[in-house]
Structure formats: structure tokens, C-alpha cells
Image (cartoon, rainbow, N blue to C red):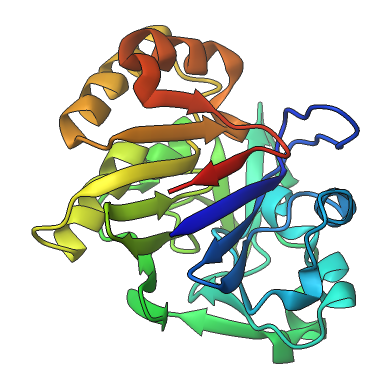
Amino acid sequence: MIHATVLADNLARGALAAEWGLSIHIDYNGHKILLDTGASDRFAQNAEKLGIDLNAVELGVLSHAHYDHANGLTAFFAHNAHAPFYLREGSEENCYGKRWIFHKYIGIRRGLLQKYGDRFRYTGDREELLPGVHVLAHHTAGLEAFGKKNHLYIRQGLRFLPDPFLHEQTLVFETEKGLAVFSSCSHGGIDNIMKEVMDAFPGRHICAAAGGFHLFRTSREDVRALAGRLREAGAEKIYTGHCTGEAAYQVLKEELGDQAAQIHTGMELVI
């Protein structure tokens, strides 16, 4: 069974703090896992208010190398001196967003990968971190087009190239009801990611997908088309927030009804 608690999201309720970022604490059959750390130490503050002990976390997973998921890493290491944090091979301090002709750094805080080098483990195309807990890299071709469309780039020397998301990975859990997929920003397209998961686990059913879907700049028509593809994919429940955006979520809700739910800081998901 999965018992997940959202520690950081754009939305919050009560005394919990919100921010542009995402962090989720996951209890999977007694194993404590942290997915991402948000954009600051707010996830840790919220964890304390929710009674979640970060020192009990067994391992961490970074979904991708952007600041709004990685900037809380220093705070996590201050609370937990033993848990390794898993990054995909290809994760570097080289991610940029583009506005007009300007490139702004949006990656992991510079120097952090070297400073905490002993805490990081790098994953390949597919790895099982614990029994029933997997990370899966993209194998969909042409993701550079998603990078260009969303104004996301990587720097190689003096050149800025559309991001192919070689630093992004999906967290997959095996449950009695099927596969639970956590994909924090889904830059490569949540429908593509779900297909990647089904290809990697032939014959298995996706019972739930959770995370941001990076739709906040996407037209209503494109979101509606995506909703149709998600319906065809057959996941019983879609939990989404962060970079999905309120307008896109409303379209997903119109199309998917009770199949879709909006996450917020403090929300608990039981799968």
C-alpha cells in the first residue's frame, strides 16, 4: 500500500506553506521515500507540522534537475545524514529557461552536486531501488520538441540546446491494484510517460498517476486532447497539481470528472 503526503505544492491549506515546487513523502509498505524537495526548506517545515520525521526517510528520488524540485536538498541533508538521493544519469547544473532572447538558470543550485557528492546515486534507464520501487528514464524519441515548446534549454559549453530531458525520471510503485506512477513535472508528456511505463511493465495496469503535468502554458484544446489520451490509458485516478496550472486542471476535471483530483500541500493519497 502507498500512503503519500504532499509536503510542498503551489496550493496549501491551513497553517502549511505553499510555494512553486513539489515534494511528496511516500510510505510504501513501511519504506519511507522522499520524492523531490521543493524550491526551499518549506517542505521540511511542513513535514514537521504534519508530524513526518525526515530522518526516517530511507531514500530520496529527484525527478529532474530543476530548482523547484531540488533547492530543498540542503535542508533535507541537514535533517537526514544517511539516506541516498537518486538522480538520473545526465543530471547536471545546466538547466535554463528562456524568455525572449534571455536564458535564466533554473537548475540545481550550483556547486551542490559536488558538495554533497557522497549522498547522490545515479540511475540508468531502469532500476529497482527497493522491492517493488522502480525509477524509469525516458525512452520516447524527440523530446527536444517538448523542451523547445516549453522554452526549456540545457547549456553545453557556449550553446543553449532544447532540453531533451535526459535528467528526468519516473518513479513507479507496484501495488496490488496495479502500477502507481509519480512523475513530478512530466516534461516529456504524461501520456508519453504512461506509455513508457506500460512498455516497461507489459501486461500491467496503471491504477494511479500523480504529479505535475506542465500544462500551465498549454491551450485548452491541447489539454482537452490530452485528457482523451489519459482516458484511453485507463488510469483509475489522476492526481495533479504544481505546474499543471489551475486553468488546465479545470479542463482535465471537466473531461475526466472524478477520475481527476487536484493535489495541495498536506494532501494525503492512499493507493
